[in-house]
Image (tube, rainbow, N blue to C red; front, side, top):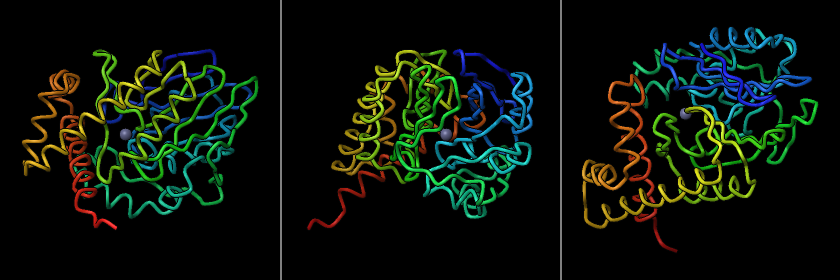
Length: 308
Ligand SMILES: [Zn+2]
């Protein structure tokens, strides 16, 4: 576990899930009240609690636990964490909330899609009591005092229940997985577009985030960048490139491997990242294949949909 102070009220805890550094971030906003954005999975909740202690955040002070979406690497730990936070309520997209209350299906799905090895590394999510979940709407604002506010920005695309958060004191955005995966040491982003991926809603979401004119992006994977708008616009171009390659592949009846290889050939960021993550226990399995699959299936869906 490592704690980094980023701004007056914004701190990053590297929760080091499975001992992996620079992979999953949890952010702690500390003002009159405290809030946590993203918990990481169940297995690294003890690290998150150790981080709160190091930041001198008393457990009673935590008023909100906000998650961008319910995937285990972002929200798997909420149920376990809440047992230590007597006053915290959970902020989650209404379409994701039932899966936090009853995580069985989510757990089974994750084991099937991501494989037992990754599921074991994350550990099983514990249920969240329904009465601790806040009914949330797009644009809702949560006040932590001293001009620190967290605003809900619905950003569908990566998932159909994804939302981002704008932090007003640092003009910082928590984009979850709506802005890709950021590799600080390379200063590049690669897509995270697992199936079912929806390009239109993802692009609408990116436009929404750009229009907020943020100064900071606080990536869940991983860390802060200060050229937020540039990164968001570059991500949009990158997604369009990937989809155009998948479109060509569809027209030319290419198989999955051919599309994937063409994406690698034409996207320099991907080449750099693949070299960096070749031994990464999780990313080497998920980063390219899952995201290419999402884009390929998206193209298949729109090309084979009956025209009306
Ligand atoms: Zn993620």
